[in-house]
Length: 225
Ligand code: Z5A
Image (cartoon, rainbow, N blue to C red):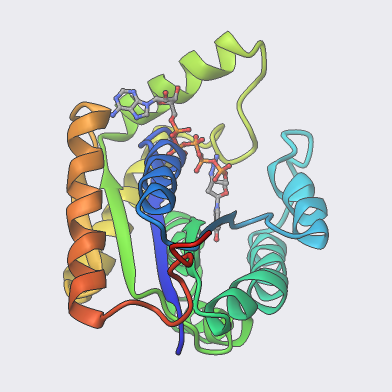
């Protein structure tokens, strides 16, 4: 029996990681065998590619190079982590996935959407999420959260965060277009609300999906432990 694949999407500082971790805790507490990963990253090769992609020093990266690197990291992630976990009947929660490429490289950078769809299909071998949680937030608010966090950690913005506001607004519009085209897969949640309220929404969607589709094979931790 295949597992269940849930992705979290949205612009900077929309709370994807926060919500993913909260859902992971909820699912595990309820006895589900759930794993978390992230894109780009999630594998040793992916981590190296992530470093290249987000390094603010890489100011000369061509849009086509950027696209290929995101897809390369994703291909490795699907091959090494996501597909094996799903085949084992586990629930996989992934921080970003193919929709990010459509939103950032397609709507943000202006690369061809059909080409991106083909490259996404190649990298994922056709794998699609069962549910995508899209956290929707005004980019100014999201970037303010990211800035606050960077200040707290005495860090700096990464290469993509440093893009101008208009870029992030195009990304948001891209995400909304994806959601409008696939309302059955993409749940749009207002990310300007408090974390706990959003958490409840995410749980309801996932619990409903688990009820509707039946438990993913093998994902229940045996009661005996
Ligand atoms: N990218 C791309 O261009 N193409 C692709 O195909 C893919 C990615 C896959 C990856 O960075 C970058 O790569 C990303 C897109 C691009 N662009 N950038 N930069 P990433 O995934 O590591 O970083 P991110 O997506 O920007 O994540 P983030 O900034 O860490 O945001 P987040 O995960 O959505 O938010 P968070 O870490 O959960 O929360 C951020 C802060 O807000 C934190 O201090 C929280 O405590 C706070 N927070 C969270 N929720 C709330 C609420 N509800 N209210 C108030 N405060 C909150």
